Length: 336
Image (tube, rainbow, N blue to C red):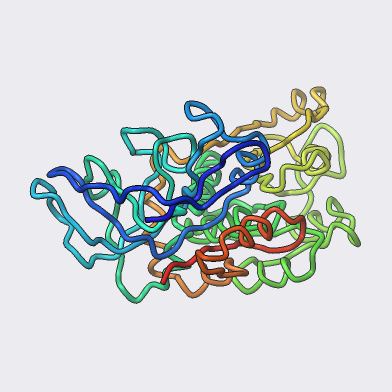
Protein backbone atom coordinates (compact mmCIF):
# COMPACT_ATOMS: atom_id res chain seq x y z
CA UNK A 1 0.00 0.00 0.00
CA UNK A 2 1.00 3.64 -0.41
CA UNK A 3 1.34 6.26 2.31
CA UNK A 4 2.15 10.00 2.25
CA UNK A 5 4.96 11.01 4.60
CA UNK A 6 7.10 14.03 5.40
CA UNK A 7 10.69 13.12 4.60
CA UNK A 8 12.39 16.40 5.47
CA UNK A 9 11.82 20.16 5.65
CA UNK A 10 9.59 21.10 2.74
CA UNK A 11 9.57 17.56 1.36
CA UNK A 12 6.89 14.87 1.08
CA UNK A 13 6.88 11.51 -0.63
CA UNK A 14 4.32 8.81 -1.35
CA UNK A 15 6.06 5.59 -0.40
CA UNK A 16 5.26 1.89 -0.44
CA UNK A 17 4.74 0.36 2.99
CA UNK A 18 3.42 -2.97 4.24
CA UNK A 19 -0.35 -3.18 4.54
CA UNK A 20 -1.14 -3.49 8.27
CA UNK A 21 -2.38 -6.73 9.77
CA UNK A 22 -5.73 -6.61 11.56
CA UNK A 23 -5.58 -8.07 15.07
CA UNK A 24 -8.53 -9.36 17.11
CA UNK A 25 -9.17 -5.91 18.65
CA UNK A 26 -8.61 -3.93 15.47
CA UNK A 27 -10.46 -2.71 12.39
CA UNK A 28 -8.83 -2.17 9.01
CA UNK A 29 -10.29 0.71 7.00
CA UNK A 30 -9.83 1.34 3.31
CA UNK A 31 -9.48 5.09 2.98
CA UNK A 32 -12.05 6.77 0.79
CA UNK A 33 -11.48 10.45 1.66
CA UNK A 34 -9.13 12.56 3.78
CA UNK A 35 -9.21 16.31 4.22
CA UNK A 36 -6.11 18.51 4.09
CA UNK A 37 -5.56 20.65 7.19
CA UNK A 38 -3.47 23.79 7.54
CA UNK A 39 -1.36 21.94 10.09
CA UNK A 40 -0.25 19.52 7.34
CA UNK A 41 1.57 22.39 5.62
CA UNK A 42 3.21 23.29 8.94
CA UNK A 43 4.46 19.73 9.44
CA UNK A 44 5.88 19.72 5.91
CA UNK A 45 7.62 23.05 6.44
CA UNK A 46 9.42 21.95 9.59
CA UNK A 47 10.17 18.45 8.30
CA UNK A 48 7.82 16.53 10.56
CA UNK A 49 7.06 16.57 14.26
CA UNK A 50 8.18 14.38 17.19
CA UNK A 51 8.34 11.51 17.84
CA UNK A 52 9.17 10.80 14.19
CA UNK A 53 11.09 13.89 13.14
CA UNK A 54 11.60 13.76 9.39
CA UNK A 55 9.29 10.78 8.90
CA UNK A 56 5.78 11.95 9.75
CA UNK A 57 2.83 10.17 8.10
CA UNK A 58 0.26 12.76 7.01
CA UNK A 59 -3.55 12.86 7.12
CA UNK A 60 -5.83 13.25 10.14
CA UNK A 61 -9.26 13.98 8.62
CA UNK A 62 -10.27 10.46 7.52
CA UNK A 63 -13.35 8.65 6.30
CA UNK A 64 -13.37 5.17 4.88
CA UNK A 65 -14.88 1.74 4.41
CA UNK A 66 -14.30 -1.16 6.79
CA UNK A 67 -12.60 -4.10 5.05
CA UNK A 68 -11.56 -6.25 8.04
CA UNK A 69 -12.95 -6.56 11.57
CA UNK A 70 -11.14 -8.27 14.43
CA UNK A 71 -12.92 -11.13 16.17
CA UNK A 72 -13.24 -9.21 19.46
CA UNK A 73 -14.69 -6.04 17.92
CA UNK A 74 -18.45 -5.43 18.26
CA UNK A 75 -20.83 -3.01 16.54
CA UNK A 76 -18.77 -2.72 13.36
CA UNK A 77 -19.12 -4.84 10.21
CA UNK A 78 -17.22 -5.24 6.97
CA UNK A 79 -18.63 -2.75 4.47
CA UNK A 80 -19.57 -0.13 7.07
CA UNK A 81 -18.77 3.48 6.25
CA UNK A 82 -16.95 5.12 9.15
CA UNK A 83 -15.48 8.36 10.42
CA UNK A 84 -12.44 8.12 12.68
CA UNK A 85 -11.10 9.79 15.81
CA UNK A 86 -7.38 10.38 15.11
CA UNK A 87 -6.71 11.26 18.75
CA UNK A 88 -7.77 7.82 20.04
CA UNK A 89 -4.94 5.87 18.37
CA UNK A 90 -2.74 4.15 20.99
CA UNK A 91 0.33 4.53 18.74
CA UNK A 92 -0.01 8.33 18.65
CA UNK A 93 -2.35 10.80 17.00
CA UNK A 94 -3.05 9.73 13.44
CA UNK A 95 -1.37 12.12 11.01
CA UNK A 96 -0.09 14.31 13.85
CA UNK A 97 3.17 12.67 14.79
CA UNK A 98 1.79 9.19 15.39
CA UNK A 99 2.83 6.00 13.66
CA UNK A 100 0.14 6.16 10.99
CA UNK A 101 -1.50 8.67 8.67
CA UNK A 102 -4.76 8.71 6.76
CA UNK A 103 -3.31 9.96 3.47
CA UNK A 104 -2.76 6.32 2.65
CA UNK A 105 -4.58 3.43 1.04
CA UNK A 106 -5.44 1.76 4.35
CA UNK A 107 -5.59 2.77 8.00
CA UNK A 108 -5.50 0.36 10.93
CA UNK A 109 -7.72 1.34 13.86
CA UNK A 110 -6.15 -0.32 16.88
CA UNK A 111 -8.29 -1.25 19.89
CA UNK A 112 -11.29 -0.22 17.83
CA UNK A 113 -14.35 0.86 19.79
CA UNK A 114 -17.42 2.35 18.21
CA UNK A 115 -18.12 5.77 19.72
CA UNK A 116 -14.52 6.16 20.87
CA UNK A 117 -12.18 5.46 17.96
CA UNK A 118 -14.64 5.32 15.07
CA UNK A 119 -18.31 5.76 14.28
CA UNK A 120 -20.52 4.25 11.59
CA UNK A 121 -22.32 6.66 9.26
CA UNK A 122 -25.08 6.12 6.67
CA UNK A 123 -23.85 5.06 3.24
CA UNK A 124 -25.58 7.90 1.41
CA UNK A 125 -23.23 10.50 2.91
CA UNK A 126 -20.64 11.51 0.27
CA UNK A 127 -17.11 10.58 1.26
CA UNK A 128 -15.82 14.14 0.96
CA UNK A 129 -18.50 15.27 3.42
CA UNK A 130 -17.71 12.44 5.83
CA UNK A 131 -14.09 13.60 5.84
CA UNK A 132 -15.25 16.89 7.36
CA UNK A 133 -16.13 15.18 10.64
CA UNK A 134 -12.76 15.91 12.28
CA UNK A 135 -12.46 19.62 11.40
CA UNK A 136 -16.14 20.13 12.22
CA UNK A 137 -15.42 18.70 15.67
CA UNK A 138 -12.71 21.37 16.06
CA UNK A 139 -15.29 24.00 15.14
CA UNK A 140 -17.91 22.54 17.49
CA UNK A 141 -15.46 22.56 20.41
CA UNK A 142 -14.68 26.22 19.74
CA UNK A 143 -18.38 26.98 19.82
CA UNK A 144 -18.98 24.91 22.96
CA UNK A 145 -16.18 26.79 24.74
CA UNK A 146 -18.22 29.98 24.28
CA UNK A 147 -21.25 28.47 26.05
CA UNK A 148 -23.86 29.81 23.60
CA UNK A 149 -27.52 30.14 24.52
CA UNK A 150 -30.52 30.48 22.19
CA UNK A 151 -30.96 34.17 23.01
CA UNK A 152 -27.38 35.03 22.11
CA UNK A 153 -26.25 37.12 19.18
CA UNK A 154 -22.99 35.92 17.67
CA UNK A 155 -20.33 37.00 15.19
CA UNK A 156 -17.88 34.58 13.57
CA UNK A 157 -14.70 36.07 12.08
CA UNK A 158 -13.40 34.01 9.17
CA UNK A 159 -15.46 32.07 6.63
CA UNK A 160 -12.96 29.31 6.04
CA UNK A 161 -13.83 25.69 6.88
CA UNK A 162 -13.63 26.18 10.66
CA UNK A 163 -15.59 29.44 10.59
CA UNK A 164 -18.29 27.90 8.41
CA UNK A 165 -18.36 24.84 10.65
CA UNK A 166 -18.74 27.10 13.68
CA UNK A 167 -21.61 28.92 11.97
CA UNK A 168 -23.37 25.60 11.43
CA UNK A 169 -22.67 24.62 15.04
CA UNK A 170 -24.14 27.84 16.43
CA UNK A 171 -27.24 27.38 14.29
CA UNK A 172 -27.54 23.71 15.31
CA UNK A 173 -27.50 24.84 18.96
CA UNK A 174 -30.37 27.27 18.28
CA UNK A 175 -28.50 30.57 18.56
CA UNK A 176 -30.84 33.32 17.44
CA UNK A 177 -28.59 35.42 15.17
CA UNK A 178 -25.21 34.64 13.61
CA UNK A 179 -23.12 37.10 11.60
CA UNK A 180 -20.06 36.05 9.59
CA UNK A 181 -17.19 38.44 8.79
CA UNK A 182 -14.64 37.95 6.01
CA UNK A 183 -12.96 39.85 3.18
CA UNK A 184 -13.68 37.33 0.39
CA UNK A 185 -17.05 37.74 -1.32
CA UNK A 186 -17.34 34.10 -2.35
CA UNK A 187 -16.78 32.95 1.23
CA UNK A 188 -19.42 35.35 2.51
CA UNK A 189 -21.86 34.06 -0.10
CA UNK A 190 -21.19 30.53 1.11
CA UNK A 191 -21.80 31.61 4.71
CA UNK A 192 -25.26 32.82 3.71
CA UNK A 193 -25.92 29.56 1.87
CA UNK A 194 -25.22 27.46 4.95
CA UNK A 195 -27.45 29.58 7.17
CA UNK A 196 -25.71 32.73 8.45
CA UNK A 197 -28.25 35.45 9.22
CA UNK A 198 -26.01 38.23 7.90
CA UNK A 199 -22.49 38.82 6.61
CA UNK A 200 -20.02 41.68 6.78
CA UNK A 201 -17.23 42.40 4.30
CA UNK A 202 -14.62 43.89 6.60
CA UNK A 203 -12.62 45.23 3.66
CA UNK A 204 -15.50 47.57 2.78
CA UNK A 205 -17.61 47.99 5.92
CA UNK A 206 -17.07 49.30 9.45
CA UNK A 207 -17.49 46.07 11.41
CA UNK A 208 -18.35 47.68 14.76
CA UNK A 209 -20.90 50.05 13.25
CA UNK A 210 -22.48 47.22 11.25
CA UNK A 211 -22.70 45.00 14.33
CA UNK A 212 -24.48 47.79 16.20
CA UNK A 213 -26.96 47.98 13.30
CA UNK A 214 -27.53 44.24 13.42
CA UNK A 215 -27.39 43.53 17.16
CA UNK A 216 -28.21 46.89 18.68
CA UNK A 217 -26.06 48.85 21.12
CA UNK A 218 -24.75 47.03 24.15
CA UNK A 219 -24.26 48.26 27.68
CA UNK A 220 -20.66 49.01 28.57
CA UNK A 221 -18.36 51.36 30.45
CA UNK A 222 -18.12 53.47 27.28
CA UNK A 223 -20.69 54.01 24.52
CA UNK A 224 -20.43 52.70 20.98
CA UNK A 225 -20.36 49.00 21.82
CA UNK A 226 -22.35 46.34 19.99
CA UNK A 227 -25.04 44.15 21.52
CA UNK A 228 -23.19 41.06 20.32
CA UNK A 229 -22.80 38.40 23.03
CA UNK A 230 -20.14 36.14 21.48
CA UNK A 231 -17.19 36.90 19.19
CA UNK A 232 -15.50 33.82 17.69
CA UNK A 233 -12.11 34.28 16.05
CA UNK A 234 -11.79 31.56 13.42
CA UNK A 235 -9.37 33.63 11.34
CA UNK A 236 -6.29 33.82 13.56
CA UNK A 237 -5.66 37.47 12.66
CA UNK A 238 -4.61 40.16 15.11
CA UNK A 239 -7.09 42.60 13.59
CA UNK A 240 -9.93 40.27 14.61
CA UNK A 241 -8.97 40.47 18.28
CA UNK A 242 -8.61 44.24 18.11
CA UNK A 243 -11.99 44.65 16.39
CA UNK A 244 -13.78 42.25 18.74
CA UNK A 245 -12.48 43.97 21.86
CA UNK A 246 -13.33 47.37 20.40
CA UNK A 247 -16.93 46.23 19.86
CA UNK A 248 -17.43 44.09 22.97
CA UNK A 249 -20.06 45.10 25.49
CA UNK A 250 -19.94 44.30 29.20
CA UNK A 251 -19.90 40.55 29.77
CA UNK A 252 -19.18 39.59 26.15
CA UNK A 253 -17.18 36.47 25.30
CA UNK A 254 -14.28 36.28 22.84
CA UNK A 255 -13.48 32.73 21.74
CA UNK A 256 -10.27 31.99 19.86
CA UNK A 257 -10.13 28.89 17.66
CA UNK A 258 -8.07 30.36 14.81
CA UNK A 259 -4.31 29.79 15.02
CA UNK A 260 -2.32 32.99 15.69
CA UNK A 261 1.24 32.90 14.43
CA UNK A 262 2.22 36.23 16.00
CA UNK A 263 1.59 37.78 19.44
CA UNK A 264 -1.42 40.12 19.59
CA UNK A 265 -1.51 43.23 21.82
CA UNK A 266 -4.77 43.58 23.77
CA UNK A 267 -6.55 46.38 25.63
CA UNK A 268 -6.60 45.00 29.16
CA UNK A 269 -8.30 48.13 30.50
CA UNK A 270 -11.29 47.39 28.29
CA UNK A 271 -11.23 43.70 29.17
CA UNK A 272 -11.19 44.45 32.87
CA UNK A 273 -13.71 47.30 32.94
CA UNK A 274 -16.23 45.42 30.79
CA UNK A 275 -15.49 42.03 32.37
CA UNK A 276 -14.91 40.40 29.00
CA UNK A 277 -14.13 36.69 28.98
CA UNK A 278 -11.49 35.35 26.57
CA UNK A 279 -11.44 31.59 25.99
CA UNK A 280 -9.09 29.52 23.88
CA UNK A 281 -9.99 26.33 22.07
CA UNK A 282 -7.88 23.39 20.92
CA UNK A 283 -8.93 20.06 19.47
CA UNK A 284 -12.11 18.26 20.47
CA UNK A 285 -12.05 16.58 23.89
CA UNK A 286 -15.65 15.34 23.54
CA UNK A 287 -16.95 16.62 20.22
CA UNK A 288 -15.48 14.23 17.63
CA UNK A 289 -18.67 12.19 17.37
CA UNK A 290 -21.06 14.76 18.86
CA UNK A 291 -20.84 16.59 15.55
CA UNK A 292 -21.48 13.46 13.47
CA UNK A 293 -25.25 13.49 13.96
CA UNK A 294 -25.59 17.05 12.63
CA UNK A 295 -23.15 16.31 9.79
CA UNK A 296 -25.34 13.41 8.71
CA UNK A 297 -28.62 15.28 9.11
CA UNK A 298 -27.46 18.40 7.25
CA UNK A 299 -24.84 16.95 4.92
CA UNK A 300 -25.97 19.08 1.96
CA UNK A 301 -25.01 22.24 3.86
CA UNK A 302 -21.72 20.79 5.02
CA UNK A 303 -20.97 19.78 1.42
CA UNK A 304 -20.75 23.48 0.54
CA UNK A 305 -17.62 23.75 2.68
CA UNK A 306 -15.67 21.46 0.33
CA UNK A 307 -14.12 23.50 -2.48
CA UNK A 308 -11.94 20.87 -4.16
CA UNK A 309 -11.74 17.07 -4.36
CA UNK A 310 -8.46 15.73 -5.70
CA UNK A 311 -7.57 12.06 -6.30
CA UNK A 312 -4.90 10.41 -4.16
CA UNK A 313 -2.56 9.98 -7.12
CA UNK A 314 -2.33 13.78 -7.18
CA UNK A 315 -1.91 14.21 -3.43
CA UNK A 316 1.06 16.57 -3.89
CA UNK A 317 -1.20 18.90 -5.90
CA UNK A 318 -3.76 18.77 -3.10
CA UNK A 319 -1.18 19.68 -0.46
CA UNK A 320 0.13 22.55 -2.57
CA UNK A 321 -3.35 23.90 -3.30
CA UNK A 322 -4.36 23.76 0.35
CA UNK A 323 -1.23 25.74 1.27
CA UNK A 324 -1.86 28.47 -1.33
CA UNK A 325 -3.32 31.57 0.40
CA UNK A 326 -6.77 32.24 -1.04
CA UNK A 327 -6.40 29.28 -3.38
CA UNK A 328 -9.08 27.06 -1.90
CA UNK A 329 -11.61 26.53 0.84
CA UNK A 330 -11.50 22.91 1.93
CA UNK A 331 -9.43 20.48 -0.08
CA UNK A 332 -10.30 16.79 0.26
CA UNK A 333 -8.26 13.92 -1.18
CA UNK A 334 -10.40 11.07 -2.50
CA UNK A 335 -9.52 7.42 -3.13
CA UNK A 336 -10.86 5.10 -5.85
